[in-house]
Image 1 (tube, each protein chain N blue to C red):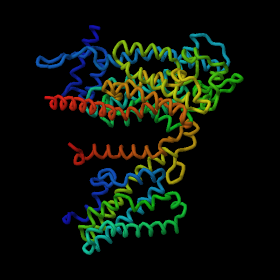
Image 2 (image 1 turned 180 degrees about the horizontal axis):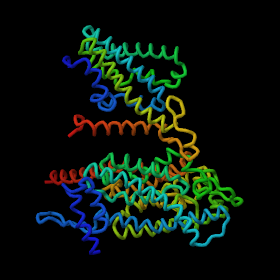
Image 3 (image 1 turned 30 degrees about the vertical axis):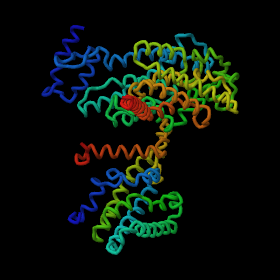
Length: 207
Length: 397
């Protein structure tokens, strides 16, 4: 692990070691916040900030944490960061914060955050840990954006709240797909992303 | 025939390895075996016997069994359209009007589904399977006649892709693809799949409608609190005989219990579908209907328990969808449990849950998912029983 190049730490989680499609972590919030692009992007940024900073902090104090209480220490750090993010959102983007409702708070339980702390930050130096956190946050965000793009476009005919599908189509009989707004469709879309990714990348195919 | 065979033999090398179009091999094979019996026999060392009844013949049986219900459905479409506009129409003008409405739906479902089937067969270099020929006819029969064609195409592609191809194609699917298409339509475009406008062709944008005409299905009326004795179809009183024969608005192929019964007998006689699933399904409906009769308090729960068999899509679902050998339970005991639970859940959803006027679709999909579990339990029980017997035999010695 220690030998991994710093650029790889950012690049790997985007594709080969994607937290959602390969590690299959953080699915719950990916289903809940991807109805529209805007909350999905805010969520992605929030998770990136939390994973990156918590990775950094835990890595800085990793040698002083007694391993028997390490989960409690990790939770303290993560919840401190999540509350910070939540307060910032409440102050500057109140409407979006309301739309995301509990899911910002639930970043604490997002498996990606704890997963990266356990798997990486506890055993690596601060800089690689920071990069790993950023990479995993971005990898999570990438999938969120892909899923939210499809769901908002076909579910509401909009992107970022702007009407994309012209009224003329609706006059001809086109209708928004209501199924896209339901969480099961997000699960199916993530499944399709995993399907495409695995059929493209030989390394990921299980024998 | 002779010349056709010769022509096929002549163009066959083009599709072999090194020919002009090796990529289209499975397409060629699909058409060749469509025209002629596949020329495959058991090898000299084969341990099994190759029967003439292959997947293609089985699917053909299913399609033949569907025809009575399909033709009645076409006539029914024409009948209700003319009843709505108040035009006088004879048997043939009803049938031909229905033909004009239903054929495009069938064509769209076949074209969009087969396009994906052929595409995946080429990519995977496999044979094109015949499974879709039945699915492609089932989908038009379980949608309302006014369902827009592009929705049929989207739903069919979704079903083939997510219901079938992701699991590896025909024979590997977990849920029935035709029902998945129906479920997709129901959740994606609820406005076009329920209500009282969609079941009669052209009702949605009709200029003039006969006074007192209603396009609601009997189940739709029941869900709105109409008493069983006051059910109507169009603007007439609906009798029990009408329900049995199918003179009521509904999805294209599912209204006539009689025609479905003919199909069911054909399927059972040819050994294609399991009578156990159908029979236990009927038992499940009767049991749940009777239970609701006894313990229910609302008007809907008090309708005669046997009438659930005649209304809605239950007959069609249990005969043509639930018996799909791929998605049904495989063990013989499992088939009884599987069918029975479909009947129970279908009526439970239909009567008790106001959000869904019909529960057959959801019941079959749910039981499709549970079928492997049922089989697992049945097999484990059998293993345990034999183990206990063996233990007892050892102990007594």
